[in-house]
Each structure stands twice: as C-alpha cells, then as structure tokens.
Image (tube, rainbow, N blue to C red):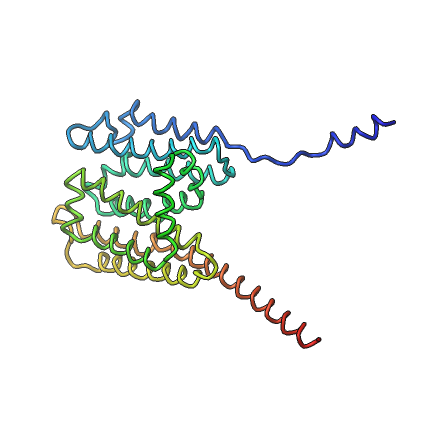
Length: 301
C-alpha cells in the first residue's frame, strides 16, 4: 500500500527546464563556415575576393563569428529561452547574408540593393539581437573586458532620445553623397559604415524596446522621431530630380531606394511604437486603478 501511495509522486511533471536548441546553433555555424567553403554562394567571401576586399571580408567574418562565439560560449553558464536563442541565431544568419552574401555585391552598383542592406542591418538584424536579450550570455562568455563594455553600453541606453539623435546622425551622415560613395568605393569604410549602423541601431533598439516604465514616453518619442526623419530622407531620395550618388546609378533605382527606406523601413518603427504605446497605456491604466483603489479605501475609512 505504501508503494502504491508513493507511486503518484513519481508521475508528477517535473519543472520545465528550457534548454539551448543545438540545431539552430549548429545551423548558424554551418552557414558561416560555408561562406569559406563555398565561396561561389557568397560574393564577398574571404575566399572569393581579392586584395582589400578579401581582407575586409575576412575581418567582417571574424567579427561576426567572434560575436556569435562569445554568445554561444555564454549559453553554457547562462542558459536562455528557446525563442531568444532562435532570435539571436536568426539575426546572425541574416547579418552574414547581408554583409557577406550577394546583396553586398549588388549594393556596389544599385542604390536599392544598398538601401535594402542598410535597412536589414538597422531594422531587422539589430532588433532580433535586442529581442534575444544577449547581454547575460555575452558578459558570461566574453570575460571581464566584455562585461565592462556591456555595462557601459547598457548605461547609455537609459536615454532613448540621446540614442535616437546619435543613430539619426549616423543614418544621415552615411547617406550624404560624399560619404555614401566613400563607403561604396572603399571596402574598409564600408565595413566601418556597417559597424556604425549596427552599434548605434543596437543602442537605439535596446533603449526603446527595453526601456523602463518611466522612460516609456521618451521611448515612444524616440521611435516617432526616427520614423519621421528616416521618412524625410526616403522622401528626398524618392522625389529627387537627379541621382545623388553618381550618374552610374539611375534615378529610378534611387527612387526605389527611397521608397524602401520610406515605406518598408518605416514598418518596424510603427510596430515598435504601437507596442511601446500599448505597454505605456497598460501601465497608466494600472497606475490609475491603484490610485482609485487608494482613494476608495480612504473614503471608506
């Protein structure tokens, strides 16, 4: 009888432990290694390029693999949710495609492809990384130096509008004709341009998506500000009467690039603004309900 009574305890469901999905991680690693093994599939693979382009492509590959390696190493001591790991790996795969794939080669002759690459870096890849909340894993996998850098960067994200101003400056700076063509013609400046987009966009998205409740109005304002000034830049490119970036690029191609920034690039900002606004509205409702409850209890006494 005692054995029969003890048996149901062993059939209880154990506490769910969220493990790290190995398949997405291995897929991401295989994808990055294929850039070296199958250079034909990647226009700017270190094995398919030559000269400065080869070195810059190798630098981009090393930086991306190092970033992902630190995160995967940190997963051993700081496990993450399955959705977070998938979000990080998805952003890494898209980053490898955007920076080392054929899109980067098309961007040298097409303003629309170049704008698509920029939008992928700023409004697709970095939000995926931010939504994965990778700081615990990066700090655990990168040691004291990376942990100190993450803390400093996290301190800056307490000011959403400052991050919006900085990110906006970087966007307009690299879309001025002189600096735009400098990045197109010089592979080293092109790598630096991508780093500027990724770092400042990462600060911006972390500041608005992970903002504290008291900073929600500023996060919403930062999103609307970014939506407006990127829309203006896209409209300028769309309604321009002459190509901004040299006669080799057609006006129609530039107008398509403007529409990509203006319309497609604005969708993530709108979605994020709706989400932040919804969170802020819910916080205000709970706060008002608490105030009403306090006033009601005082009136009763």
